[in-house]
Length: 257
Image (cartoon, rainbow, N blue to C red; front, side):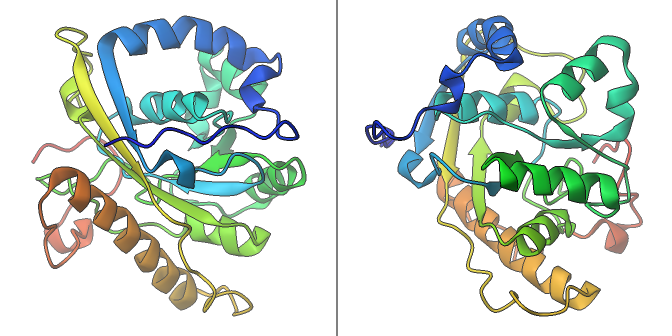
């Protein structure tokens, strides 16, 4: 059964109650997304109502960011994403991304470089959340299980000393199939989302953030996301996580199984 968010203490004002460009976006997207799908949020009380954190969901549809943005809004937080830098060059969408505080990341650069780091620092200073897809792109796994993760999410979390909150969703593929350009609005879909406990990264804090450390920490985050998806699907994920390199696949661009 879905868990409803606990009552909000008076001292914590929901971010969504403050006037911002998100009001405009919500006014446009929420009616359409609510018409297209019903959302069941399991363990919603685990979603932080205040403070900075990295929100790390699975990723298998182009519409995932919209869906998780809707979920974040329903839980009272303004979603800010690390998004492909090329999207910021689009005439209208780029303006909206910049005005809403989204973070441009060069594909293949993960969360490295001064731009994303400085943006993450600003988010932490303001106590805001950031959504980072650890997989970096849509999973290549033929059955839509999470594939090998990139290090961006844990790098931000460890550098900024903030928690990683894992999440999984299932049902988005019925709304928009992987690599499809078409959204299926009717009949109304059901999307289930499960929020996890903060990932325990204590053994990595204070260590040098070299590739070995970041890859090890990323595997821990991907394990947490996969367990949540197993619960939603009531299935077991493959024992070995999909690695595009093992299947002669590129990790960017469109791919059909």
